[in-house]
Amino acid sequence: MTDIAQLLGKDADNLLQHRCMTIPSDQLYLPGHDYVDRVMIDNNRPPAVLRNMQTLYNTGRLAGTGYLSILPVDQGVEHSAGASFAANPLYFDPKNIVELAIEAGCNCVASTYGVLASVSRRYAHRIPFLVKLNHNETLSYPNTYDQTLYASVEQAFNMGAVAVGATIYFGSEESRRQIEEISAAFERAHELG
Image (cartoon, rainbow, N blue to C red; front, side, top):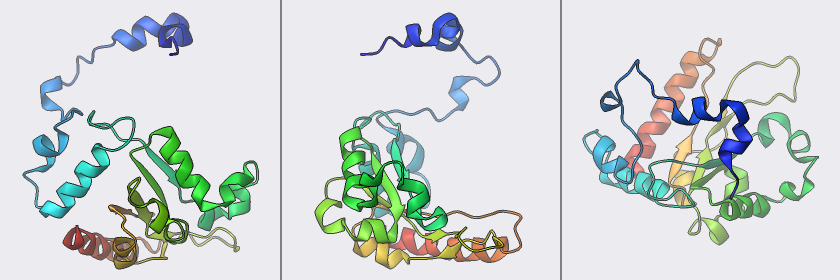
């Protein structure tokens, strides 16, 4: 095990012993093994969503702590796989991305529909999948700063994903459309669980 205090050096005491005096801790929703029961149980999400959230919180090295470690590898569409993986060509192969998440003890792996769909039969039961539904593409000029749907919630659900994610460029010319699309997608995701 690494000695964290040694790594932090002269700042160790200040960083490791810091106590916030601005916001009392009893006003915060702190992580814990009971996070879903304590924090999410009274919201309007269906039981299937709560089950999937519990799956996320109970998988990987941080299982049961209330913390999440998600390996996000969703940039291949936006920046090209070459820009993302040229330094580590092993990760051009989607199975190696998922294997990395499993080996690292992540709670979840987040990626594109194409990456996760290509390995879902082999891995969806071994580590939770989070499918990124939309992407920008920066390969054309000029860049439009517009997130476009690349996958549907149904496609993510059918491959066994427990969650979906999306990006919205708030303030961009297309942000209102993006908000409407993602709001509808998340509503459908909550219906499916």
